[in-house]
Every structure is written in C-alpha cells, then in structure tokens.
Length: 151
Image (cartoon, rainbow, N blue to C red; front, side):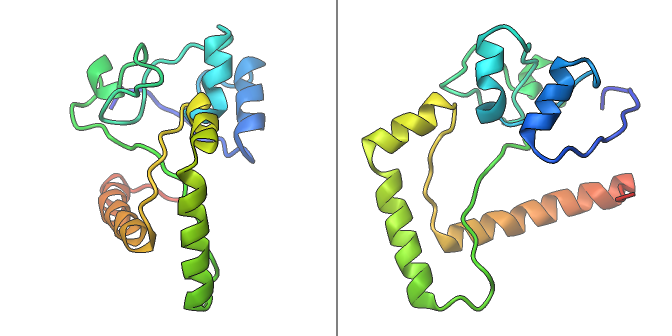
C-alpha cells in the first residue's frame, strides 16, 4: 500500500512493543488504542491513524487511515472477545454471557473502558461467531492474494 518494505517483529504483547518503539529499536508500530492512548496523550508517541473506517469519539483528532490518505476501504478495526474451550457446557456459556453483559452495562465499568478509548459493544456468542467468520473470509483472501506466510 505505502510502497515500503517492512519486517514484522513479533512482540509478546503491547508493553514490549511500545517499549521498543519508545526506545528507538523499531521505527513504527501498530497497537491498540487502549495500550497506546496514554503515551499519545502525553506526547511520547504520535498517532498517525486509526485502523477503523470511522473516527473514534474518544480521539476525534486521530483520523482513520483511509481519511489520512490511505486506501479508501481500509478498515481493520479491532475487537476483544471472551472465549471458552470447545465442549464447554451451554449452561456455563449462558451464565458467562449474562454476567458479562450485565457487567458491561454498568456505568462504572463503561467509564473505565471509555477512559482507555474502548467502545463497548456486547454482541453475544452468535454475532461474535459471525464476526469471526467474516474476518476469516476477508483476511484469508488478502493473505492468499499477497502470499503472506508465517516464518
């Protein structure tokens, strides 16, 4: 897209990746808003763009990559999901879903997520499964088209 060559460096999480970026061991990084927001707000990092199609209401000054001159259909987004091992009994899944949705509906917890720049959307298992399938189809095609492989 940008006409540059890049080497993927797999870090074991946001903390070492952001530390390497701050320390000058890497030239740029892609991370979650939740992990990098405080560093951006303090002026230690400069955010170039969001990987979502729409601006975030939490950081309206950071444009989506598509609006910052990137490809017009650029939308990778991000998500977090609760998963359990295959074969987990349905009553346990139902209880987890209920408890998590109730927790996410509380104003105090929502404020904590929002302070990190996280928009909360409790979708439930069926919608989450659909999202994962859509992403698998979308990125599977890109991976095959570009010949991306794990070394």
